[in-house]
Image (cartoon, rainbow, N blue to C red; front, side):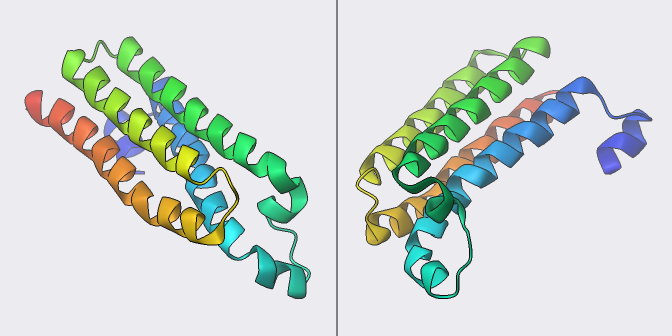
Length: 136
């Protein structure tokens, strides 16, 4: 809301950032959904893992990829520097490693993937903070 207020509009890159965030949240929250899937079955809640079964891991991977593509698009449109793309690549690599470790649908591995996404989020935050601090 502050962004819209200061810009007097919601720009296209703001919508892209919103979409990137939504995909990232879907990815890391689905890891936690796998942890809860046993309880979800008991109370008949149709979570992502129960709805999509083993395809959930493909959906999680696709969401990470969509996040990365959208953030690269934002950086390209806004002419962000090499540091942005290097840090973004590191964040994507970390997300890929997290995803790969959780492929066996093991609840413990997926809980660790959920917790490890804090590091991915920190890198995303750091990338934007450094870019905008540089502009001050």
